[in-house]
Amino acid sequence: MPAFSLEPAQSAWCAELRTLAAEQLRPLAEKGEPGRVNRPLVAELGRLGLLPRLFTSGAVDLCLMRESLAYACTEAETALALQGLGAHPVHAHGSPAQRRHWLPRVTDGTAIAAFALSEPGAGSDAAALALTAERDGPDGWRLTGEKCWISNAPEADFYTVFARTTPGAGSRGVTAFLVPADRAGLTGSALDMLSPHPIGALRFDAVPVTADDVLGEPDRGFRVAMGTLNLFRPSVGAFAVGMAQAALDATLDHTARRDAFGGKLSDLQTVAHQVAEMALRTEAARLMVHAAASAYDSGAPDVPKRAAMAKLFATETAQYVVDTAVQLHGARALRRGHLLEHLYREVRAPRIYEGASEVQRGIIARELYAELADLEAR
Image (cartoon, rainbow, N blue to C red; front, side, top):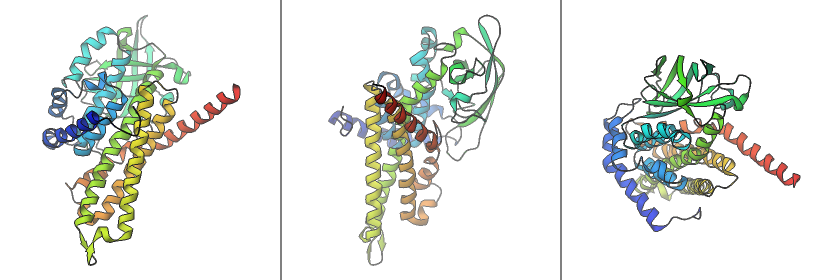
């Protein structure tokens, strides 16, 4: 599919998703408690058939879902995305038994998934993980250490956990484990964060895991993490684009109606040019997101670079668009409950999670120089 256009059926589906988000998901989101998993909302995503699409569709469809839901209900978008992020390693690398047990529950919304990669001392440096997996007999390990900034923690039903199985081996010594929340020695606590979705910390006190809990192969967990992030980073960009579009549309409506200086706000050239810049950047971000998603679906070799570019540009763009929208709306946009007040809180975190903007720049530069070295070696 060309990155610059959608088929009529796709456009219609996006419109349908926006309506569903506004009419059926938004009321459930409003009944939820900030910082807590909204299980009725997740269950409704399953009932509507959206959660199964996380594992039966490609990156382009994932981006369309995330952008469309984010436009009308960021809470629904985030609940959907977190199910995908936490369970994708099970879908892609899990054993038949792991998949049979967990994926049906994830897709019907009765089991909450979480992706436990970040740590207090590692952050975006996934190769520097300190959570240790010490051998416990010929077929087991004990997990000891902490995870932090984990979405859906501590309320998830299972965690995809990345732990160091070989000391001093960097990214080559990390293993991915599927750890049920009721496993002995696993505890957690909620963190009070700016964004309204649930985030927490996890503590592992000699938590037992076996070969049956491994996702993929021992010491190959870094590939599990990066493969998951290469899929979800462009869709983080789609989430950002959805928020940017919502802010842009609100600003168009406000500036066209607001009386100011003997006319409308939109009559002021400085305002009109700001709105044009918002639209320009939003559309450019959307194109980058769809280009990265299309590259992923086609198996292109430059997916890491494109995913990093899309995530970086779209999240930075959304920050700019939402901030400009607040400025053009004035004080009304800062009142609790206003759409832009909500978006202002939501838009900040995507520039940090799943690899901060600085990390994305590092990935882009590394991939560019690798491409140059490959050309020179030919």
